[in-house]
Length: 349
Length: 166
Image (tube, rainbow over all chains, first blue to last red):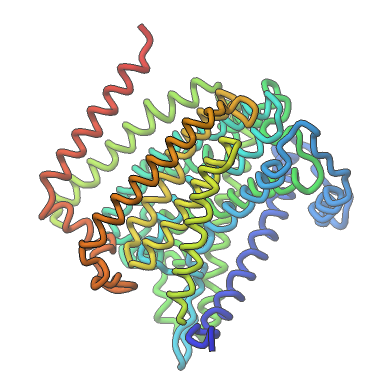
């Protein structure tokens, strides 16, 4: 037979896991939009959405339904193929990053253990970076294909911002990799469970990484591609209906995934702080469930910080953004890297 | 036919088809996008050969950074199908003949090289893994590695000097 040598069960297991993670990403992204509006309301001393369902809990469903039923407009002078490709690419690159994140402790059974991670590959975190670097295309292609000057400026701003902030992000990561000695996400988590979270040893690295994550997700104070007072609406100016929804949704999924990456790299991943969970002797599935909830709690906290920053800090100017990236964050990250290396050499680790 | 062969054929078809589309597309933006697809297919080949680091770096550097710059230039100069300069017929024919000659030279040179007896080592050998590659680069090949880094530094300095206003 043609496909006999393919391991069907492995594919089935991974397919179920991928479906769960994608479903989860959409669910979290939906409710992050709700949380964003609720937190904004709370910070500005008003109610926020409170009409659809108790406490406005069905508001995201209403918003999604509205987007689906809106009229779909494709500008005549646009490039049709690329106009359709843009939101799709943005969505795909947002979702692909979640493949290498360990979502919980592996479920150990008699027949073997089931890791709650789609791919625990040797490259681990570098895969996240490769997908992030490709993530620029969704914005660039969409903005260019709209055939609108504002969209083009926004797309180019977005692309140069994302390319610039990848560098300090990678340099901040290198200091973490010095400490773990591995790029594997599972080993990064295991190292933190054994020796304490990386945020304790790398506070500066954590701050640099977090600032860069804000810039990569195009969030305030770095949301220059969507600066309404300069660019009307940004790179998705000409989009309507669910294609606009895809762009907006991709931003929230990016936020969710980058929170997961930050939690895994610096906040111990699915590790439960201050306890030795191996001594509890719990059922493996229960243990996985608890560790998964712990990771989700950390992600929720980071998402809250993302939203909190958005409604607190005003937007940077574009030259300030570039100065911060190239002249402040990169030297800081280099310094952090050298100090980490020197201390490790000194301690003979 | 196992999964590696299926993947090999799939990736090869994708790589060759997208490479052909790069040179036959009239719109320069399409050419850049097809080139990105080509890079992804080639990265897939690297993974089949167990050179994972090479595969990822190929995507980060080529597909993620260099192609973004290409796209930048094309978008800012607003190149499209209409402004694409059309070479005259004789130049096209001369190009085809020159390319054909190069192909002939390659075939002639590689025919005697005994490539037929050498099989590709698929999914084995671990020199492509990041740990072994890093060790090898920083011990055996540390001098050429550092020299090439100085080359990059001089290129960076050159770019800053050119980019600086008078």
